[in-house]
Image (cartoon, rainbow, N blue to C red; front, side):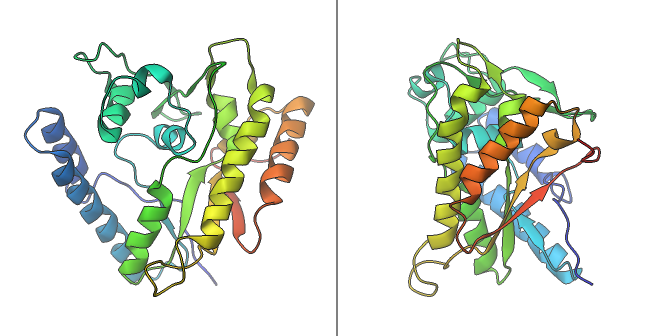
Length: 256
């Protein structure tokens, strides 16, 4: 029997993430110190799961703030007002999460995550939004784990759920974003297939397995929703090559 888990608590065994992010927000530590704390939590989590004998261990389930926000940054869906604020990437990330009074930026709105008490940051898709693979987080964290001798499967919120949970601020609606988001997720799979050079020669070799979270599949789906899902994954999976792609759902079943 093989064992797997979908994700692991990111707060740290002693709530380190809470304390370190609060210290960062107060200006008591810098970005480097926060990054070191985050890496330490991730490494402890992976080692714990390895020691417990879990066969399939996730990576990229860690987040400094919110997984939907991580995905927004990964596929380049950052609104222009945050891009134009002259902030560092991490400063821009937290401006989207919490706002930034000095830059006159409000945070993205929050909405309840399905039937849980967790609230996610709602991606904002405008008529000028252009998807592209911009972030490195899933690949960097996979490399961190592999450097510790632990092979993982990166987890990323999937394109169907991303479009289902986004807000649309212009005239375009989700169907208008299908070609762009397919291209972004194809780029993710392409990066998995080749990342980041030959193993042992400055890279860690291909990422053999990835998991997309598609919790929106457990909601009441219309025929249009099902066709949209099929269209997205026909496009995305045509680029998977030798990468094994898993889909994950929670909070309900797939009756539709």
